[in-house]
Length: 171
Image (cartoon, rainbow, N blue to C red; front, side, top):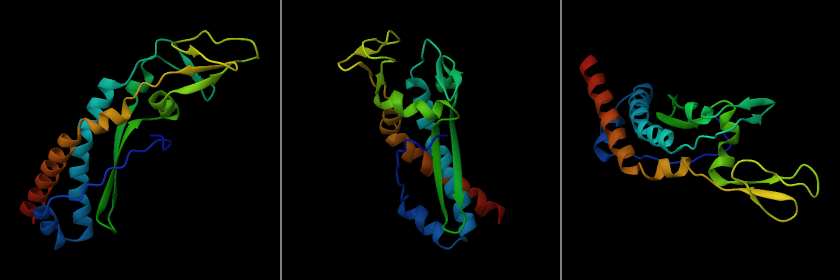
């Protein structure tokens, strides 16, 4: 996943979960929190896949063509745990080469004409002055995060609680 665009959301958890985790080792805390984060990013991924626009033509990214629908197909999740601090981070978004252009799709961008006086006739670009063309934004990352806030919290609590109960049963 590309690190060019990041949405950060801190989950402090419920007081009950925090109290239950306080007496556990940092490694066990990390495992439980990772399960919660894994559950919390699933609604984001599902919504992001549904909102991701599909390009109808190919475009070159780093010298290789990005095929139609490749950005949507590349949306992945990854959870990284930090046992020394008992914390975890969840990443969700387009991966590989599609991740390199996701911010351009999310926010829109200007495209410079190849030579002065020439225009760009491609896609949904709108002609602008000074030989530049503006490609409109098609947000899918921010809406996916913002429209699933309630689901994220509920999923985090459910996932972390299930992992906590499983760890208590195994001990």
